[in-house]
Image 1 (cartoon, rainbow, N blue to C red):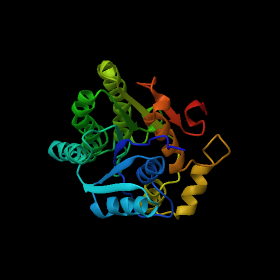
Image 2 (cartoon, helix red, strand yellow; image 1 turned 135 degrees about the vertical axis):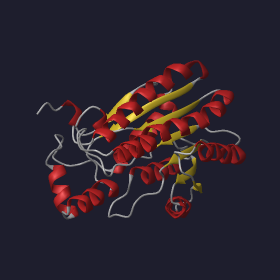
Image 3 (tube, rainbow, N blue to C red; image 1 turned 90 degrees about the vertical axis):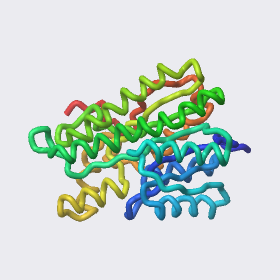
Image 4 (cartoon, helix red, strand yellow; image 1 turned 180 degrees about the horizontal axis):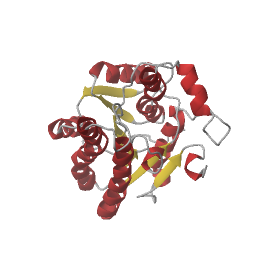
Length: 266
């Protein structure tokens, strides 16, 4: 039986991951897309991390190649699109997964440099990658863009730059969807909630001086659905649906994958 993305050409930015005990969103998405029949261009700022993901895919019999790129640089985003076109002649799917935090805080405490860096990567980088593939997608008669946003786009208060950047990703998603529907280019976003990923668990543990397990326990207790965080595979399966032809009549959607976090009042 053919996979849900059989014959598709997909770019996944942020396809590598920081070291940790679990799998990150970008790697899980790339691996799952390949399992479902897509050829995947794994993009990461650190080439070795992208190569690790591509090697995992190839070890399972899938098709992938790796490319280093810093998505805050327009020329490097354009080079990613060109590499895909040179290899496949088209881009069917783009997943914008890159996202950072670090040095964030509430509005009265965050430093300007941290605010600029987080907005550059999370929002501007998503726009630059989107811009780079829109021309090829429009020319070929369609495509699917999936942006990885966050529950923080509508909730929180302690990470103003991250929250604002992800709220911007949501609006970018709906704007791109509206402007490109006539070209059969779909654009949707996922808002993951509390997830057990290396960037979240190990990153918070280092920043707070706690053990990874202590961070897990605290985050699990905050999830309404079963008192357990989601995993990168939950994000990946949502991305798979939105990228597939099963979602061919869905564009401009912001899909929560958060264990009920976005509907909890207290």
